[in-house]
Length: 238
Image (cartoon, rainbow, N blue to C red; front, side):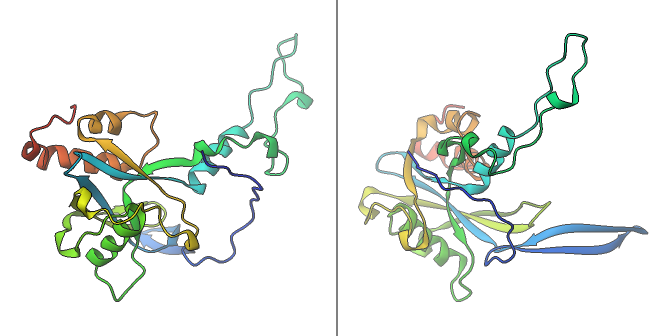
């Protein structure tokens, strides 16, 4: 279980990963503006272990997800009605600041999500396949040649805010390829748990809304079911 404490929310005035901008433009004669964030593109990898017939995912704490859950705890609730059926001004709930609601922080598990192995495209001297290979090794502990990565597709994510592109790959591994426990790079602040999802449970996992996961997990499991599952002659529980 993650342990999260000493939380402090402050304005972000400078970042190595996000740059806020506002663009103004005319669209069909109408003047418009839009706020957006410039950020890195990324890669993700659907990893399938052919020795144990399971998918290899990562599980980690995501501050953005956690803060979204926290926002729910400080949403004003409808005031209770007085006997006459009217709520007095003093009874109206007010939004709480981060400091005021320090005792209302949700458990750390509220910010934990299941994801594909992934990473930022921030090394211009490396190909997308080489970046993906590094992420598989660092996060999940499997040493896979870049040439063995199959490109699935690329797509835009966060089109309303970032518009960044993610390129998704598929990698088949075996127990023989496992050279470490993975877990990411601690010196970079990564605390990643490697998770195995059996093939026969994959689609149940994908559609279970109680399990917090990224769209990449859902899409890639469906892709595997449509393109790779017949090869292994094992039901993916659809």
